[in-house]
Length: 144
Image 1 (cartoon, one colour):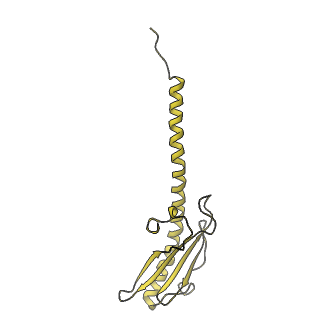
Image 2 (cartoon, one colour; image 1 turned 90 degrees about the vertical axis):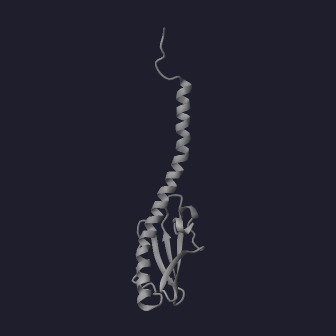
Image 3 (cartoon, rainbow, N blue to C red; image 1 turned 180 degrees about the horizontal axis):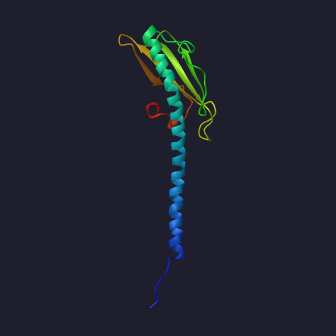
């Protein structure tokens, strides 16, 4: 009696097809994941600016300008700029402009945070603005 020693061609083709399907799903998901990680790195870089703005607001009871908050327009490998625009005594806009991240994020795409100095508690709340040009799927979860 003869024993089979190996796989048939159809069995091997099925395995290759399954691996191909899994790769077709996994590769785009991984690219989205790495892009979101890079955007998060840019947001983390800008969090130092947020801290500086809040400290200035708590000390002076008004929003700072770019220079009075000590925010330099420094860039990183991910961000082109972090710009503070004072829109009122208690309001400001912080704009993070990103460099191109692969084909997913265009050069100059922005993530915009609006802040308000909230009355008696002197709390500064940050909210994502609808004027952000960064695609929603790459924004931090609180901005989607």
